[in-house]
Image (cartoon, rainbow, N blue to C red):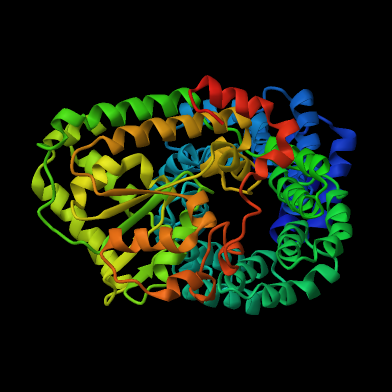
Length: 588
């Protein structure tokens, strides 16, 4: 911040340094009343406003300063920072991008550009910029924290953990970082460690919304939605946080108490300047309440609004190109001669399919067998795919045809070690990452003895269930019906190719077959896995294992039919989806 000749401004800077911000702000206003072009006073006053939580006021001060002193070099960068803090990243980007390009070694420019990309739901670019900022300023703990949060948003929780622990080494009592670290552990399926971290955050910051939400999620995953609700009730009764209200409402719906949560949700929606992600979560909650009351038109209106507020980063053309590349990389006529890992194990069971196609139910049935373990949604195979591709000369799926056996062996050994650590005594370990369906050709090279279960469900029911589920930005295709049709069609096209690969050990299981007659379908699954029959697989809902997916409540109940043909309740709103599916060759 520049100095100035006015002694009052120098005094204001001294007061600000002594943490007497209100007095400093008063002096800055005196200076500006007499000299509106005094940029130093505007910059300090804007910073005080921003740090006090008044980011919009900070923006207004800096915009006025830019008009009064357009040539001052510090105003635009400070304005960009205030815009990001005010959650107006789209307005900040045209300032930050040229600044970062012009000064690539300026850590602060890379940092704020990274934060802007995160707000705009562009996590990969956010990670890239924040990683640059950290390389330029490796001892700044705030950058470590921001990079950790960005890596979580980008679906890389394992890498996030190390940066968040680095931040906590410098700021051990920071509740927000404890919550972020807990989230990274949760995403790595380390649920008990995550719960302990959420509790630690609550000890430091009683009532912390992120910690309460995370702990409630943990209790619900354990099958104790009532305890999760009881945890949140005192917090929502006392000046409730809007984000907390959405979680509370979802629990109420799961316990058939949705009507009681409606006034809280409607009140939270009335708050000023709700962040889009919070309003989206509240709209999903209100939609679920209406859905449970069979008010389908009202529910769909809120589902639509919730999805309109979500990030729309899905690129249909890129998805089609990816499908083309994977089909070309694993040609049926040459697949048998492609290199394979020499490390062999029949322990892995890969359960995949479109989200909401029954993958969690299939995993729960298998995990109820005494010789099997359900590991949940593991990120390891996608990480192995990316790692092997990066190690090959072409750095593209087509390069896998020339992959050295040693590269595949190392990746296979690493994955199998992860499974062994999770369940050393299990004959079968289920990896239920739905989008592993995209890399089944690679998985067959890496794990030749793995068994693959492909879950399928009626296209309209699958897509509607995705549209009405509150997903992360990773599933941005789910926020638009036309994008859902593309995602489903491309998944179907790729699965048809995989089914034709020689030697691929794959079983297709339809959600409807499980619902229509569970026992024969379950027997077929266990026979495919080489496991003896066990009646406990029919009582999957009694299994107390942690379930952390969107189907957590469904798999705690016996089989029910209400989800079959659910799309017909919303048929009047789904013509665009049905038409798009038909145009892609998928008959609804």
